[in-house]
Amino acid sequence: MTFLWTSDEANSMAVLDAFWEAGGNFIDTADVYSRWAPGNPGGTAETLIGTWMKARRIPRDQVIIATKGRSRMGDAPNDQGASRVHLIKALEDSLRRLQTDYVDLYQIHWPDYDTPPEETLRTLDDMVRAGKVRYIGASNYPAWWLMKNLWVSDVRNYVRFECLQPHYNLVHRAEFERELAEVCKDQGLGVIPYSPLGGGFLTGKYRHGEPPPVGTRAAVSDRVKRHIESETGQRALQALEQVARERNKTVAQTALAWLLSNPLITAPIIGANTPEQLRELLGAVGYRLSHDEMETLNRATSWG
Image 1 (tube, rainbow, N blue to C red):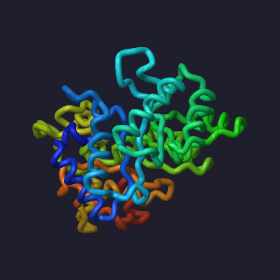
Image 2 (cartoon, rainbow, N blue to C red):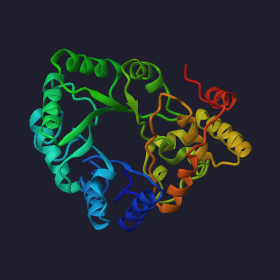
Image 3 (cartoon, rainbow, N blue to C red):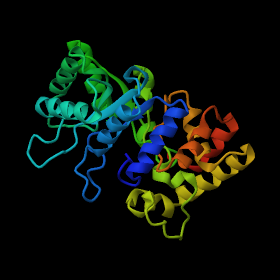
């Protein structure tokens, strides 16, 4: 998501190089990244990833590519949604930009309540049968809509969502924990949360009362600014700093470890603007918190 938004082309390519060299093999993107940035038509992150794979001669079967469709990509009525007509075009456009003939995981970016789930899932089923998609997933789905879609897949024998990509981190818990967590556990869905560091807030680089540095996510994101100004955000940082200091780890690594220590979480989706940032985040590999450390962080941000 940061590629060609808060990270320029050179840094974006360097981040991919560093990730691959470190043994990373799962890259998550979306067709809409980063259409909201000035002068960005969308699709640019996919194009950059496709260019990187071709330039570096990355074996296609050794990298897992996940992308998403559903977002508005133009001004016409069918330029958005989870309808058959839009998803077919969206997938073909993504495949062209990624320079591949299939994606490993194709996700519906968020719900489209105007399109019956039967239509969306039949389309996704056809994509899998055609060999253009390996598995399907959902992102930003509420629990009731996720269960309805899983039910449709069951009764109609369509492919089913295998994973959920929710917005989930130490300062944004209720949305996932209230109901979605139990759905994922019961239905055996993988969980790949986005924004695991709260848009950079949980790295500890932003402080209450101090203006965010120019060019950072907080400088352009109201969501991150709200974390900076909230009491919950400050309690979270204090608890993270305490645990990180005792474990000789960084705040960011500890925020990722909070997710990784939850057996329900498959893999948090990290983002980095530079190879240096990426290498710090990869320090969370193998880092797990004790029960007491988890309780310290959970109490600091309790939502119930």
